[in-house]
Image 1 (cartoon, helix red, strand yellow):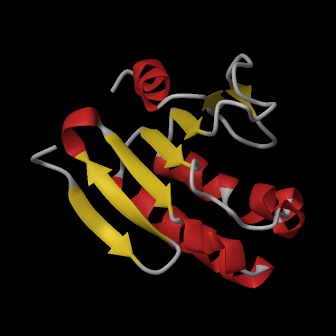
Image 2 (image 1 turned 120 degrees about the vertical axis):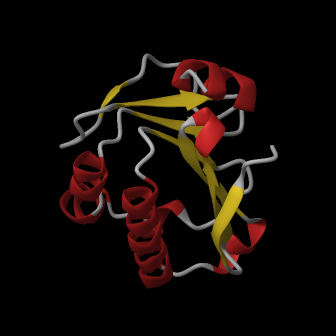
Length: 134
């Protein structure tokens, strides 16, 4: 897309601002297979900073290449330290594009934890973008 702007990139992923779609996107790379719990927490903090700076109401996470050990995810920490930043940034919808076989794909989008916005899990990019209205 012509107006997409790469906001940040490192070995774990890239953050793209898409003004014409009114969203910010995170694309994880398969290098996340070697990502530690602390590196993941740092990355979520970096992403939350960019979500606030972009001021887009919609967020798309492309998790199709995400490979980090799920045991490293800390939902309580995310609820306390990241979700409030998304709330403050004015996020209205949060979508995950995940591999179609993931168990959470296809459920009804709903707020998670302290989020004031619904989160949806989709097996295709097109479904996620349609739900976001992007």
